[in-house]
Image (tube, rainbow, N blue to C red; front, side, top):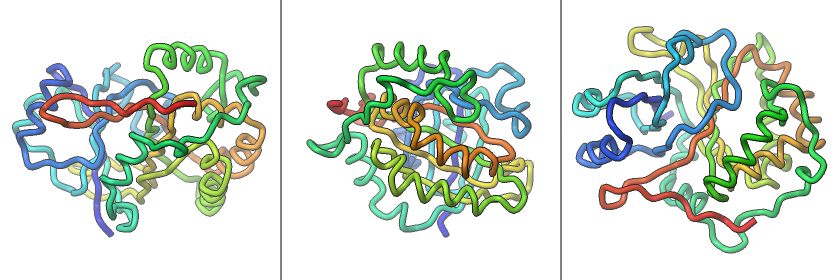
Length: 266
């Protein structure tokens, strides 16, 4: 099973400068993304490395190997958190083409919103992956500022003993209906590799997932719905010992510049 590494980076230079240096190396990331916002914060695992120093994270790179970033890039990094995972080869086959289709969808690729946001189900907190008033407000502001471009949610998962199978039921329902009908696509999923803590920062996490949504509005439409929350609370919430979700927007390298996905029509 191929190994992929998720690199979460806080930079000492502007993003465009880092990407310019990245383009001159042999590193070919599967995904390059600008970090936007925490959706769910970790509560017990990796909190010191991720939260305690009040670090501002800038970039998320997913690379198709266990190799560290070249020293040329490390010189531009103030903080790094990384985790390695075994990813099924079927997910990586033609990944570039599949990801480009997701980020630059063709007519008919993007489903319409289901109407959940017309009368949203609102919770007091987003920690259980529900639409809180605070998250709802931010989504509205982000949607106005960023348009309707795609977002990718990085999920780190730690399962309660014996309950991974329950989470897998959630994953099945996500792929079958509750996520897919809103354009949700778990494009990278893998089991965390635990090893030398000096090298590997698995730190108790069990699985990674990078989930694509056509827009932040599609993500919100899912969270606000009764059908999603029924499955979420039945299978997902109780199965997790800890989790975090980080919202990102993917970027690319094109003539050493930035490009963003074409905004889909809702």
